[in-house]
Length: 86
View 1 (spheres, helix red, strand yellow):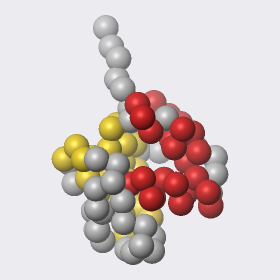
View 2 (cartoon, rainbow, N blue to C red; view 1 turned 45 degrees about the horizontal axis):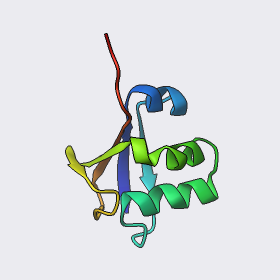
View 3 (cartoon, rainbow, N blue to C red; view 1 turned 90 degrees about the vertical axis):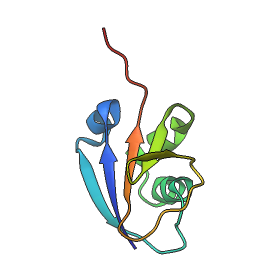
């Protein structure tokens, strides 16, 4: 399954990229399963994202969704941290 991931604001800085395309197993079919899998297998920034997930919104195909929502082949997944401004 191929997923396009978008990073915004502080997460863009953390990952040092705007987007990432991943090929994952079809059993990794929710945003929470995805970041848990990546945190366990790739570590690094994915662990930080997992630790901050209570403050981060997730969007699937440009719609704010629950962390347990289904993701499918070809979906776009966006991680949206809190944004502050003045």
